[in-house]
Length: 341
Image (cartoon, rainbow, N blue to C red):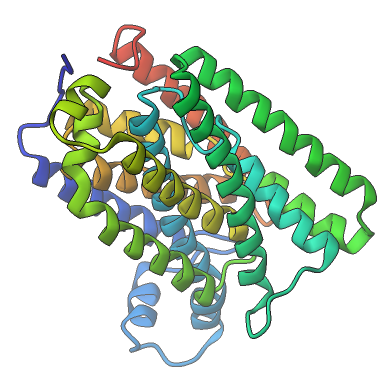
């Protein structure tokens, strides 16, 4: 029996997380090489401020990065929540199951071999090949689950093997890469918001919207999966079809996020656990709260990356790992050493 830990009013909880996200987003726009006042930010965002150096910094540098942090955090958290539900495994995430490494490998191969797609920008072409690689790793994991019905520990082991395989491929790509390609591949390894743009933000946002429209009518199936395969089948949930569909959704979310910012760890792992601790297993609230937790964590990591080394480009992927570890420990302590309750 699943033990729910739901806040007294889920809508109030979602409103609180949304408000916190707005505060962090606003503060992220303020800080940088030099601070910008809240008044200047408001005037710029509302279009009142005339063209100046401050408006240029906000509109062309800080705003795209902050928006990218929000959408990437939401995408990775949604992917992590889906994977944990589909595999009934508390350690499942795009990073721990090797999906992130696969997507990064696909992007690296696209860079190394100059793969291109007619009438498609370079960044979207890289995202396409990242999706292909991520989908292949997800299908491999799905095939293994459907054939063996492996337990949680075995699935994590398979994920580690997939991770090592694609990490080896990434290392090989780095070895053979030219100095220019090596710089781009290294970008995927560390994770960074430095190449954020409005077009990239729009692309990730559209993917999230499409995946959400596909997922929302099926939230009851996802909630049913957490009750176990036997009960889910008794309730009329087509297990194979549901798992395959959402594996592909998780792959799409992961690949599109990673293709623009590189490998980001812990967001997809910790965000669903934080959401589950407060909102329970009802996926009507678990999915959006996971996405809000992920967005909040990414924006907070963006802020910390500026504070840790002011004036320098500090990889946000390192910050998310540093932030994710204590948060994961806090969840374990709160749940008395257990992740599934």
